[in-house]
Image 1: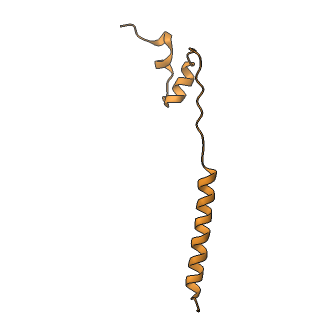
Image 2 (image 1 turned 180 degrees about the horizontal axis):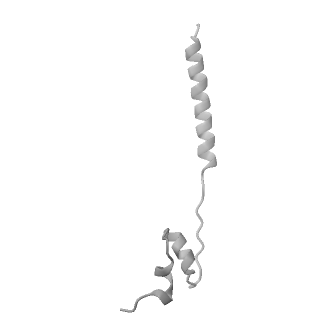
Image 3 (image 1 turned 180 degrees about the vertical axis):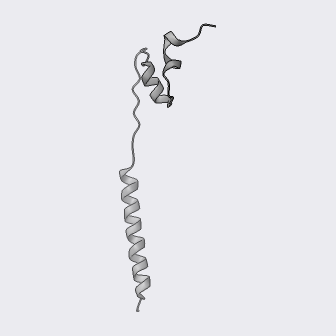
Length: 67
């Protein structure tokens, strides 16, 4: 049975695409590991980074308004 050139190229492209996607999905698997400290507070700058804020003022104990 004779296959056309287009069909052969399409099959090769699909196989390569499958292989590339398989490798990418295996290599991009990441683990997120968080360390819990025993009662220690994290520094205000670190809390700011974790929450994506621009200012650490809200996390600094000396900068909190008394109610």
